[in-house]
Length: 317
Image 1 (tube, one colour):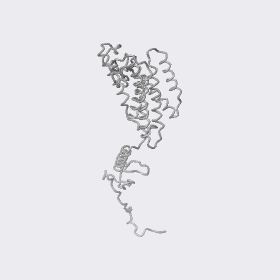
Image 2 (tube, one colour):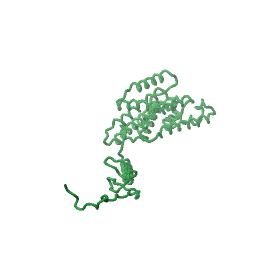
Image 3 (cartoon, one colour):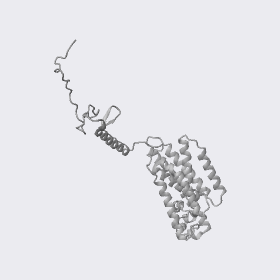
Image 4 (cartoon, one colour):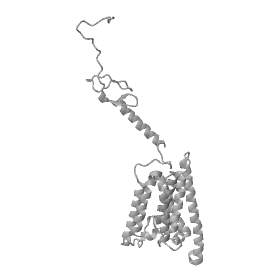
């Protein structure tokens, strides 16, 4: 048998070393420590970490550092992005704004016409509707865009705004705000250009349908890119094209122009290579824009010659 070299006096227990107090609660003795700063901490002041436990100060510091690094990462252009290279917006902005603009313009035309259903009898409507002869004779080029914010009656407005809300929400989340605006404006412009280039020169056209059909074409391309079932998207497009042909006083040319332009723009958005993606997308949009402007210039020259033959006084003959 062996005995300790200096046994305690008979009848007295061995003395134990006192435990340190918690850094935040000194009155609480604890044998626990933070694995990061090694300060003593009671169970109430410790949080479970990937390895061991950390004190509340270290956890707070780590969270602040993580938020700062994440902010710097996003500011540098990195972070979670969609297939189009856009960061997912926190909330919708462009779609509600576009709907608001269309509603305000409609309210203005209805007020001027003193008739909700016959708002086309207003000066603002007459100045903005797409009238090819006015574009050529008076150089009123803005009609190619402003006509996309005018509507014939309340039903026309309601149908287009409902379609914009249903289609636009997902596309704005997928493309981001800037790319979505580019898609919408180019589709709207393409619808007006096709009507101007191939439609009757003495007929007025208005409505956001060209842009809406552009969103349809974009949805189809996005579905194919994401390898989803395209049956529903194709069915919606086919049904709307059939309605465009069957129902009178609907501009099929404007619908088809917007549809094709929207699909082409979306191809550039979601199939651009990841490296220098923004440059490829901007280049593709520039090419589409130049092509549309070229078509406008060609048609303008053609219509000008026709009008000079029919009305020589317009050309000073």
